[in-house]
Length: 182
Image 1 (spheres, rainbow, N blue to C red):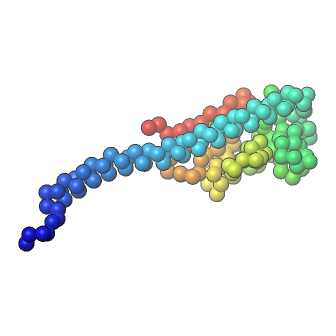
Image 2 (cartoon, helix red, strand yellow; image 1 turned 30 degrees about the horizontal axis):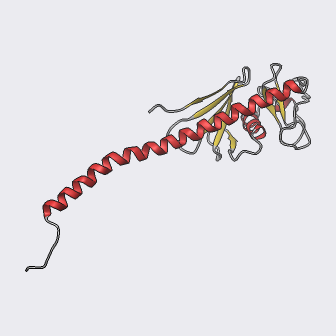
Image 3 (tube, one colour; image 1 turned 90 degrees about the vertical axis):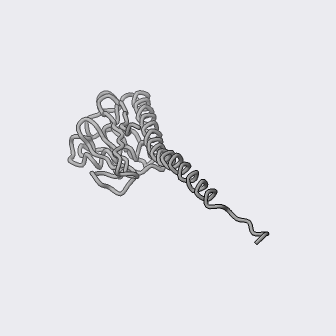
């Protein structure tokens, strides 16, 4: 037949081989983009936490260094009408409350609710943030807080297969992050 046109078998095989090569190159790059996005999310949150802690420290200095022994004067970060963030003697946040002024049980290392206090501390410091914090090893929030004296450790929960953490030292105010290496 004279007018029929189509692809030859060789042309089809070449196209399939080229698509295979393209897929083998593009797929790993796409997977890295997802990993990079999770890492960027943790890095951004760590930066926000570090900024919030430094602002809290500056407010502590500017307000005359409130007493750090309960009942803590603290500072009202969430405009709640009560002191919701408390400080240690160096001026680093180490206490948080959500309903009343800070008492001894709200201070990290004092009350037995340390994981909850770590989560609440970030919730109060980042009051307008869309980042959510829960407590314990396996919470249902974006970050789960665990207290290992003298640090609050926040574990990223959006991709649990890879461990990504943010650590806040209550003795020095230093915020660090742990991300997977490439």
